[in-house]
Amino acid sequence: MGGVDAEHVETKNEIHNLAVDRQHEQEVLASQLEGEEKKIKRIVRKLDFRLVLTMAVLYVWAFIDRGNLANANIAGMATDLGLTGNNRYSILTMIFFVGYILIDAPATFIVRKVGAIVWLPTIVV
Figure 1: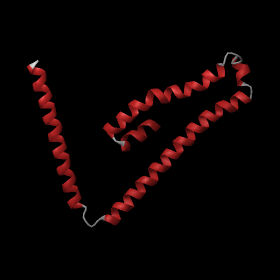
Figure 2: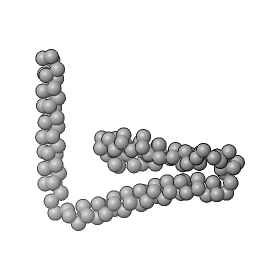
Figure 3: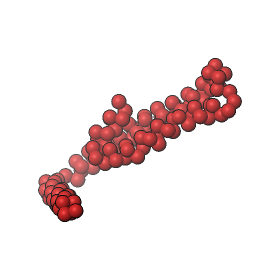
Figure 4: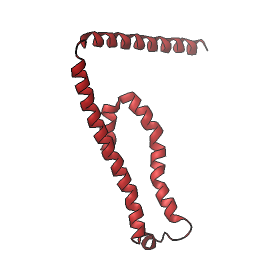
């Protein structure tokens, strides 16, 4: 029981030290970037532009993917695959959302750990 408490205290100390180090790094960075507001705004605007374009392309891609399923159904896919009756087509369309549900929560944690700069290109590939 005493070993668990010692490990807990050690972990808390490590977390505190990391927070202090991060705060110090932020202070140093802020002092180095004084007077660079225009450059920072230009960089942020450029990053925002790239992220918005990337997210828009991903959104359209997902929308087209789901829309094509409806178009294929209208064109006769349901009869070709035997999806008539018993809500088989509805089950087929729900398959898209199973992936979203399973990946959404872990993706949130991963993006917090590795950052959006690494995660967004990774999920596109």
